[in-house]
Image (tube, rainbow, N blue to C red; front, side):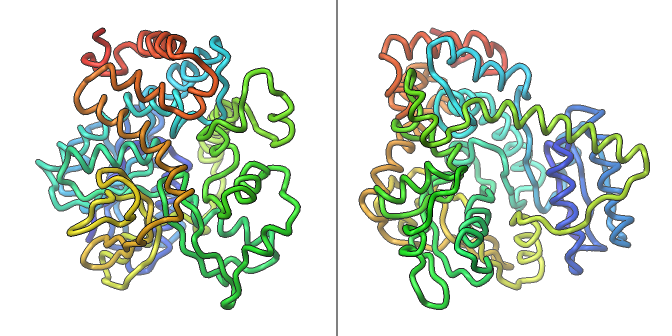
Amino acid sequence: MPKIAFVGAGSAVFTQNLVGDILSLPELRDDTTFALMDIDPERLRTAEIVTERLIDAHGSKARVEATTDRRGALDGADYVVTSFQVGGYRPSTVTDFDIPKRYGLRQTIADTLGIGGIMRALRTIPVLLDVCRDLEELSPDALLLNYVNPMAMLCWAAGEASSIRTVGLCHSVQGTTAELARDLGIAAEEIDQLAAGINHMAFFLRFEHEGADLYPALRELDPPELNRVRYEVLKHFGYFVTESSEHFAEYTPWFIKEGRADLIDRFNVPLDEYPRRCERQIGEWQALRDELEGGGELATEQSHEYGAHIIRACETGEPYAFNGNVPNRWEEGLLIDNLPADCCVEVPCVASAQGVEPQPVGALPRQLAALMQTNVNVQGLTVEAALTGRREAIYQAAMLDPHTAAELSLDEIASLVDDLLEAHGERIPSPMLTR
């Protein structure tokens, strides 16, 4: 009878997808308790209604509890799903985009790396660690399924500072597998792939169909309009990255440059994409509320998220393979030999009654490891700043960020960091605000 706690359940569309996935599995349908927690009572009530309606739609005997008390939701939890956004779209995300623009620094998503990813991590790591501390006291054997970005930095911090079993979950690998399968005219379930690296910068080391390498066919394709960045990286680095072009464009120094509209046009880079998505998601949430109040039907088809299948595997013992974000140092060795021992990597994993077991992949091609290291540098310094309060590490993280460093001088980067820390104020813990 698992208890699954959702911290940030007010992300109602995501909650709807994952609850629906869980209820679609016969082994979990009737004996599960959903403990929904959010700091926003209005959003929490919407998530509660969504969950109740899904339970009814599946003919389930599952139970639902809703609370604004995080400790109450976590007490006795077997699994914890995190899906919160500290500071919200307004003011925090808007701040992360607007202030860098004054310096001529443009971004697309700003939730994983870059100056926006750094600031989001500084706001979010302390909250995730508060969740972990509650779990250490209340539910020390719980499995934490983290869906919050910046994924690598958050899971790195949790691995350093908490004993709670944590795995970070993303939909990059399965989403890109399906996308490339469509490009090639092949059923996604027929693809045999191996992906590894770091979150949002894992690469397909193997991509095959019926024993045949699909890379030659990929190289022959005309790059789809929305995917020019990734096909360009394939051309120069030899492998296909698992995260989208709009994300990847801001993890490197090559695609977004002030005064270079030719690059933006050539690679179809969607500047300010995340604010547009946030506005759209706010509209979707309002539409969901209106639909619920009007008695509309909820969709019950499965999503492509891993979470429900991991929980089923842990409960039944039937193994489930997926890609997860975990510490590179695992038991007696490294999961990826040529990345730092303390970083967070995204590798194949197997969930079963024994929990989550990552699978070692050996050494990556040297050019891929080198590309990832530029991002790991930023991640590690940001985690250090969050765990120690060392303000200098924030400047150093920003100065080593590939995109930021390609646009701004050292003095400009320091000034930008100061402006952002001041603007975020109390949303970032006080030690990092001290000059």
